[in-house]
Amino acid sequence: MDHKELYSGLIRLHILHHAVHEPIFGLGIIEELARHGYKLSPGTLYPMLHDMERKGYLHSTEERSGRHSRRVYRATPLGKEALEDSKQKVRELFGELFEDHS
Image (cartoon, rainbow, N blue to C red):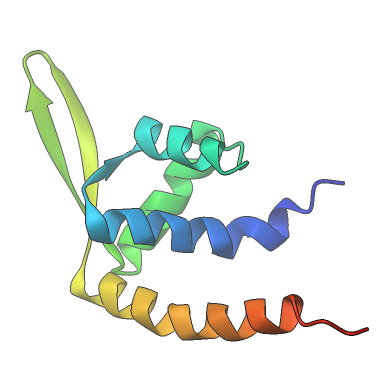
């Protein structure tokens, strides 16, 4: 069992973190997440990005480079606010997860 359902919120926060700092795109964020041990397929990632955009956390535009185009995502003000709010909750959770119970 790989417990993927437990990681979905962490993946969304990771996406939001990067989208706050720089524009992101599908393959680039798949590669970034893979560096952190998350193996996502486009069939998993793109619905997640679309859902985050539908909820107002991300905004996308199509950017062209010659004959190629790609959808680029950036965090919205709501996304930035949500990330800031989440940081405190993540700090508290991680503090509890790594408390020494000896």
